[in-house]
Each structure stands twice: as structure tokens, then as C-alpha cells.
View 1 (cartoon, rainbow, N blue to C red):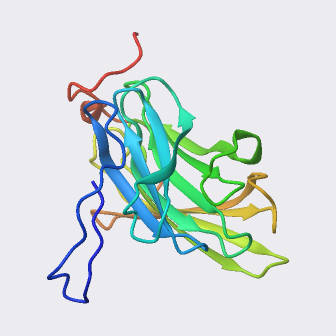
View 2 (cartoon, rainbow, N blue to C red):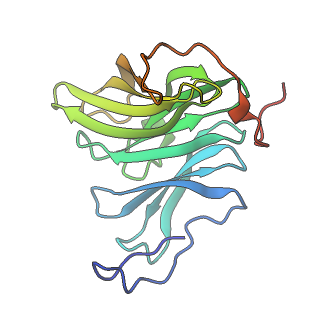
Length: 223
């Protein structure tokens, strides 16, 4: 559902608008930004179908619903697209998405999608790619920042390295080089900084661990 506030304190709101109603386990994880056209762009996970979707509102307050709701990346399994983050690139005004890919019980990945239009509609203008992979739970809770210059832009993606059983989870940072002014043409990883672990010990690259986080009843591909 989508509502917009009529005042700063949000004492009055618009009538709730349904963004997508294609079954249960839909919209559990959501990230939203206002696009360069002033209309909300909403990223959410469809856990039933195992897809990341993007909705683009018709009007500023989304009162007429959405102009489009597109699956932009698809795996066909649950736990795909969880913990999403969306930002609008200052290089071209198009959405960039980061999210968690957990399609089996032993490995996880951080993925990004770069859109080539304001609503991420045209599949020929967007690129989805795996940035990094690790043990189960790797790539959760990502966040995006875009910096650098137009000639030398940088895409910063922070994420959680859960390291399998959560015993050594830590915040980490990937620095990527997107193609400036492009329409979803992809990005090149430049550097990965392993952060300090939650326990405050010296970090080390992912090295395994139990996969208890993956045994929570979620749907995975058959083993």
C-alpha cells in the first residue's frame, strides 16, 4: 500500500493506494525514492515468485496507482531480492538497485541492477549483475551511495557479511565504477573493504561457517 502525507506531521494522509496485489509474500521488503520526474519509484521483493520488482507511480502522490510494475531481476526462488536498497543516479537520473540473493542453503550474493529509464521498464536498457558472493547470508542489508565526479563516478555499496552462522558478521564496503551517463551499462568492481566484525576483532575474508540462517523454512532450490 502507498500513502502520502498532506502535512509535515503527517496528521492527514491520502487514501491508501494498492501498488501490487499479485498474491501473498509480496512487498515484504521495500525501498522507495522520488525520481527525477517527481514521481515515486518503489522497489520491492516478490518472495512468492522470487523476483525483484520496481513500480513507478503515475502521479506525484500515486493517487492513480502505478504506471508500471516490472520484475527487473528474477530467480524463481524465495529469499531473492530481500533487504533491497534503491537510489537515483545523479549521472543519468535512473534508479540503481542493490539487494540480497539467497537461492540456496550454502551461499549468498550481493547483486545490483542499473536501470536505463526512469521506471526501469525497458529490459534492453538495464543490467543486473552479481557484485560479490560469499557464504550463506552474504550480501544482506545493502545501502547505496553515489559519488565521485561525472568523469570518474563511483558507486559505493555497503552490505552485511553474515558469514554463514552470524558468528562473525561485519559491515563491508564494495566500490564500483559505473559507466558515466550510460543507460544501465553495468559497473566494474574496483575494491572491497572488509569491515570490522561485530565482535570488534580483526576482519578476515569469508571462510565458511554454519548455515543456520538458511534453515528457517524459506523456499530454496532442490538440493
